[in-house]
Amino acid sequence: MSKSPDFTQFFKDSYFDVKSMAQVYARANEYGAKFSKINLEAAEKSLDLANAWIKDSLGKLDVLTKPESEPTELARTLTEVASSQFQAAPEYIAKYTDVARSAQIAAIELFMTAGAEAQSEAVSTAKKAGAKVADAA
Image 1 (cartoon, rainbow, N blue to C red):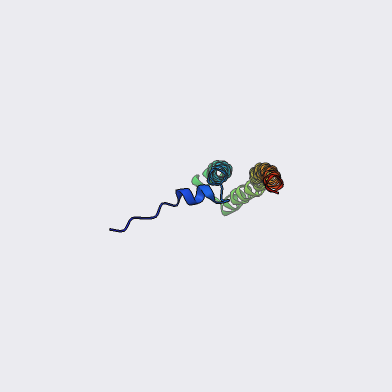
Image 2: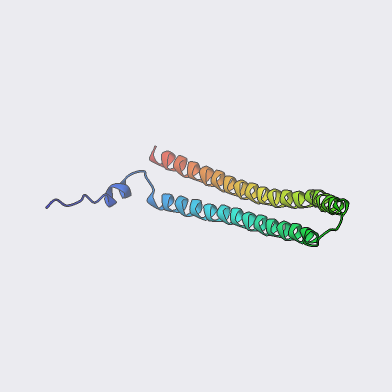
């Protein structure tokens, strides 16, 4: 039977730093998890907001369950319901905007932190590589 080659020594001897790559993967995984959490929290808040808006709308529609004796009374009731919906819409849209804004701010902060960390790591790696080249020369 043929035996699979063991590349462990190859990677140890090469310029490829396995430990650094494992750290990069771990950081990327950590930031991915944080970004997913931001998205899930925003989705949950949006869902809660949608449920509140639906409950509010259904509560306002309750007046339609009472029979009206005159068509004009029905028209007045429908107008009141529609008017209340139009008045509530900007409030709920503003709440959706707040949810989106807070998620965007959290995501931008996360990206800025990741970028700063990556830049710092790149500078550190470049300095180490420069030092190795200088020592070798």
